Length: 294
View 1: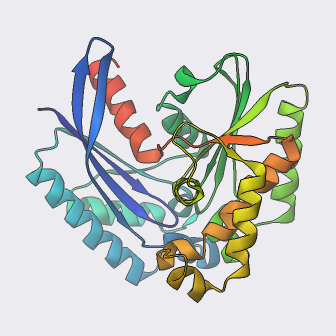
View 2: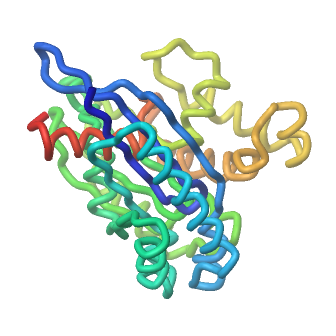
């Protein structure tokens, strides 16, 4: 049994996915075996102080050591560990990487926004798209939002913007970045008919679950707006107690809603599809392509 692992060091959480590689007539795929999420919130340090604090580095080392031990126990043959927005912005990012290599023997790669988008596309969601529709792909993270426009199942353009949930909570999002995102998205979508959205990321997955929509059905703009208004009417404590949200989800879910709703409003998107995939799934698919040829 081939086993691969994906590590995503994000601005809000750090994730490990261990996956069993499967093979059929259609080619190689995978089945999720174990998924672990640790809410480290590296973004709070990176966006406010522009460096990862000693305490957070220590927590990251402990987390990575645990991940390394799990990968050994599961006999993982290949892994890829990627760090995104928070580590991109931390002035001590490279020092942290060297320390992790020395203490945990894990090679962590700080990836640029474009590579981040490409990893997310390695999920090949476009294969299931309706060729008669155009799509705006929106991946919202703690530090950045990756956008891509698909026409006839082909990527037309993609760009990463420094707008994310932790960044908004810390008041580190800039008006000019919002303006840049609006201008970019409008210029690429203004002539597209039948535009639908595809949303990925932990928050939209959670929102979709809360919406009680059937799998494969889209989430409408109106439904998302209603959920946002309801969530926003509660205090943080109430969102945790009444809505049963994890503390590290209860705060970021509000700015995540705002990003999705704003993009849908700018582009006139009425419906958004929410495939249950993210960065770690993309990493596993990338490993399959690199090692087994898809």
